[in-house]
Length: 494
Image 1 (spheres, rainbow, N blue to C red):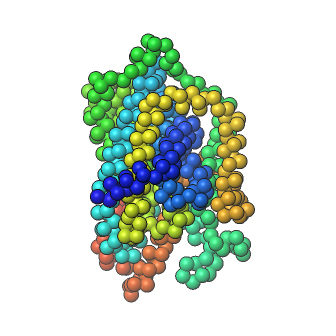
Image 2: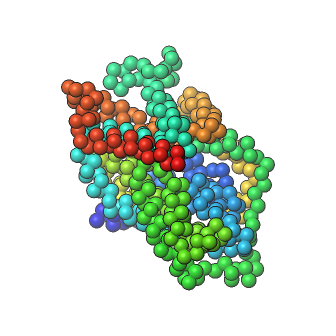
Image 3: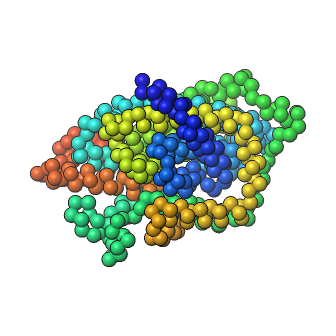
């Protein structure tokens, strides 16, 4: 099988192993810093990958995404401040365990559950992605546009609290993507006579602005808030109480297995993401639990279920990206940039032109799971103490300055810095007004492919837009998107 060849390629490359190990550490630390996310770290480090080999660049950022999802549990358990949106579910039982002096035990449960969930998702991706790609190869431009349409609508309507604001965020992403030259007629669109805009808006500074500067601006609003660690096992008695036994973890295992499949399924659906997976798994786990009254008060199962689902999203969320060119998450949207930077065209043909690269990336993901699992099991408490020693008055100014350097270095163009600053303020305002930066970014990435498929479809048809209705597969995806909006609207009205 291709995955074994990929594993051999990864394990025999010391430089690649180093990048995977570094990514596991960086992702865990960034994920554990309250207010920062793995998406912010990946966006900021994206320019560095210009000078790396394609596999090393992709593996580096892919593993940061994996370990960053897990790192959020450290902040949730120790600080009562979720490092990522998905770890808010872990916080419900993780922090009460910390208050009882069991933070290390809670983090060990989170680590083991995250590793099992992530490994399950990765294996399902490896097994199923080839079949999905084979089906995707048979889709024509009308079917591809219908898939894009369904993705736009699902992402815009499902992410966030408001359907209208989610769809507006997605529409704004499409509008910004259209800036520049028309791909067919080469006429200028929305450039207002500005030469710099004729090349369109670059993905890298936009990402850095939305995810890095936007987070820094948000943190400035809550500066001065003191974060304290609740529990620091130092005595022999405390260390004994924090040992995790098989008898204690065994009741968590059914929740972990079920949550892993919940997370994997949700990960395959564009736009839903790990936060939804974590809360769905938590709710389902509590409903099926033998001790539901203990959930929310410090149940180990309440830590295991959301962590397994949270990390199980990672692998399957790559399936729509690699097979259809549709990123299922913000991390996937950033990885699109890495593929494009290195001249790799994503989509179903990727498995014809770069199959070895894809399976080597999956192998690097498996190695990354092992690395962050070992580091987290034995060193999560150390990571928490390390983060507390970093003054926020130093951390965020450094991140702020690094963002400027990263935006400029992507193309050596000062205009990209202006784009980053504008995107940073835009991302901050979107958060303040409950619009959705994730829907905006994913739609921005999707819009180019969607427009190309739409224009090709019209060229193939003598009946104009009716081609999307007369093709059964295309009609099915369009109805799927409309149905998603309808059911989302009904759920909000209840």
